[in-house]
Image: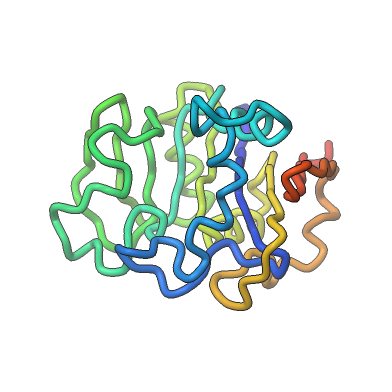
Length: 210
């Protein structure tokens, strides 16, 4: 069966995956791009970037993925459901190139973009969304794209097979925290850590065999 995977998911030292407040001008709130600078310096993001350990992890984001599930706050800023012209942050050719299932309470018609990305807007539990995404993924894996609330919901439901988490050495103090309510979640995973010369630490969580 296809796996559920999370990649390149960055959190601060105090566990926040985004700052606040989110807006059109500041998608990650007061965090800005500080949580993602490690990735933006790599060859995966920039052809002129580095090809070290951060690049090696970052490039695992895409291969083998047949569909993505994301939360409403990843698709757009507060209020986007009221804007019929909003088509996401990524321009006419988003980087997904697969079906993408956006979890939202505001249904709207599916949105076909360039490059094979089709956004579907659904109201569903994690298990229901995963079943729908698997049917569209043609046997490939499902990526849980975030944000933190969606990742936490899938971890709570026991539906994550593989998670690549990146701890960035900054303290945000406020925002949306990943770990709230997940006490003991690590017991279900084999965990490996790799420290990067850039100062970030890569954590790989792989579900233990039952």
